[in-house]
Image (cartoon, rainbow, N blue to C red; front, side):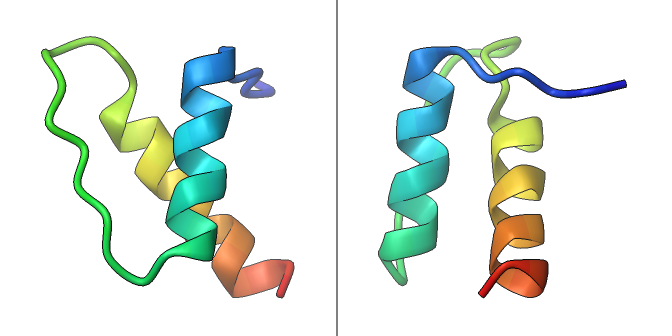
Length: 47
């Protein structure tokens, strides 16, 4: 299954890749886990 992030999710992914420290303090169900996993995958394999 392919993850297609919403614009706010893509913004957070990009922010996590650029900044060394960032916090996501959102309600449940907004995609914090998949955002974090996608950013980690980007940092691990695409840098």
